[in-house]
Length: 68
Image 1 (tube, rainbow, N blue to C red):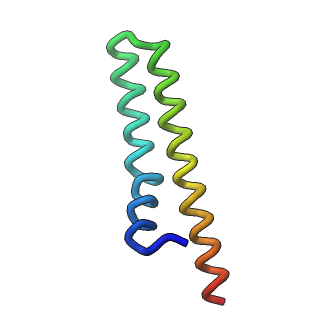
Image 2: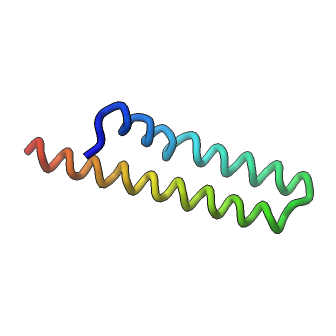
């Protein structure tokens, strides 16, 4: 189980920072003409964000089981 600070940081990353980064990379990459590489990088960033979100969700489920 994650401690509160780690949970808060991972939740911020999953909900705010990683999607914002993927959008930034996607927009700037296409604007600069790097369509092929941009798609790959955005896919990897999104996969990392999904993984972080899964960790946060799992931690939340485990925490809620322990409080009942």
